[in-house]
Amino acid sequence: MTGAGALSLVLEVENLAAARGLRVLFEGLSLRLSAGEALELRGANGSGKSTLLRILAGLTRPHAGTVRFAGGGEDAPRHYLGHLDAVKPSESAEEQAKFWARYFGRDTETAITAMKRVGLTNRSSVPGRGLSAGQKRRLALTRLLIEPRPVWLLDEPTAALDTEGRALVSQLVADHRAGGGMVIAAVHGDGFAGSRVLDLASLKAGAKT
Amino acid sequence: MSGSFSVFGRELKLAWSGGGGAALPVGFFAASASMTPFAVGSETAALQTAGPGVMWIALALSSLLPMERLFQADLEDGTLDAYAGSGIGMEGIALAKTLAHWIATGIPLAIVAPVLWIMLQGPVDAIGLVVLAALIGTLAFFFFGSIGAALAAGMRRGGLLIALVTLPLYVPTMIFGAAALDAAANGADWVGPLLLTASAALFGVATSPFGAAMALRTAID
Image (cartoon, rainbow over all chains, first blue to last red; front, side, top):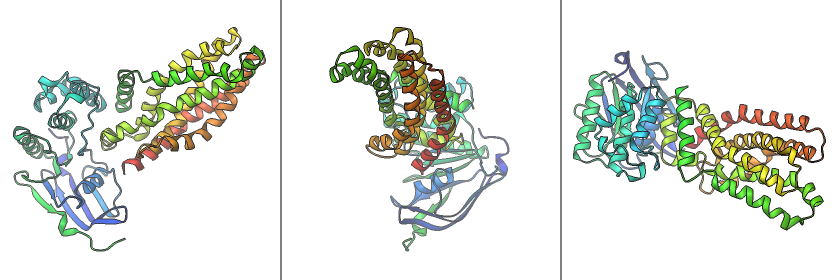
């Protein structure tokens, strides 16, 4: 399920601070995460969970501090699943999965397999606008399966999913960790079995920039 | 590399399936050229004088129309995040998307250009040149436009910003392109101005993906 060499992967975060505009969301975040581990990000709305995930994904620059993926290189292959599902309204579900397979240089068979795994096979010809919120989320999850990457950054992956969908995500995360992958996820409610927890509320910044 | 190619293929398909992406720009282009006789008068001499200039103004403004949505949809639905988070260069994405949209919209614009050329009393034997010049011109307009499109992607009603940023970049292409058509209309040598138009277009193709990529990275930050 995971790329080779992932076992030596370590994430090191040092003294990280994130800001949105003039507001510092959190500061002084240091952590170390090894391959096979999962980290749950918790905290109230607006505490910086999504921003932290975006920083780890390399999408947003940190206000201060450093993020380093040791072992997997500076640019350890990551998957970032934000709360937007990147689903196109006019393309069918299967076309979109196949697009991502081509995008990552995989054959279309991996897209079909991934569609089956997330339970979307019977919705494969439905255009994106016809999918429910949960089905869109499932379609987004296919990206994780199409291209095996050691680091998964998931922003509330179970949002909009039904009970069966939540179980699916837990299973995917467990499989990924068993294969030496690393998972960092923002969650509300039920977390993943055996994962570490980081409460961003404890790092809330008092000062203004 | 497979990333950019697949994005190119997808954009081409989306541009056609999304309700005829070329319809509005082509309609706008045709309408503005067909209005000209009513505005400048229908005398052949007047139309021949105004024709090349009107064609290029209409072509430039029609090329601006699809720019607002060029990157905006991808930014809004999270696709740009998925592209950026997958470690594939934003430059390749910008190049692939702009090229696909040029093929979907710029080429149809060039195809209808001769009809408008005839309507504006341009000489029939210059039709081939008109198509070629319109192809080169729209290529330049789309690529320079992509910089404005990327800058305005994260903004509501960014259309005005696109026009402000992009129109100055259109100027060299506009001058050389109109000069080439003017020369053709008057039976003068059009090769020089056309080559200058092409060089402006090549400059746009070569540099604007980098500018657009920089703006897009800021937009998703």
